[in-house]
Length: 230
Image (cartoon, rainbow, N blue to C red):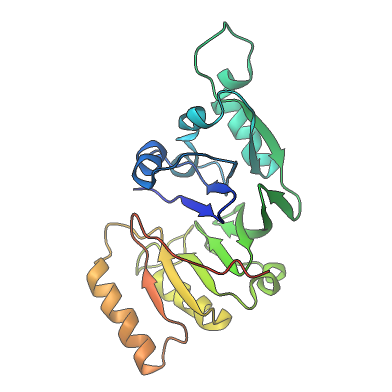
């Protein structure tokens, strides 16, 4: 399935990105409530499940946080949501909220992390000591200090060979070694990657000391506990 993250702190449920499989992911996770959606960017594999948030916002507006470019794309691609229409129809009720600095969604404080996806400026997010950087090809210098002292880093690592808009596995591991989070997961892996072989390779790298943080490839349905330490 495409990349999406559900964050729960016991009081709020927040989703980062609504992938085309959002409905299936929500059913599998037993999602009963949703307090906000955060969008990293407007590419279809991270956005086009947005209509399926409808069951969570029939009777109230649900805030959707993103940068201005992404919000503009939401208005364009989901224009029916924002037009007057007949009663019924099951449209999601969405409140588009521009992100230009730290913000609170539900009970969780978020820090936007400007990163590059090829030439496209997009957002990662940090909450507590957990940082999420999907679809990343480069971390701008101004963003590096925002990634210090992490318990958990989830970072893009598309494949072994270089790619113009994504980090390769080797590039992602270099970033992990520079940041030295207490643990890390590789995400957005493509079908060229053998998951089991990569798992063994990463474990061997950590055991030998060439990889400075315990790192594993992420997988569908992965559940991780983090302290949400401020």
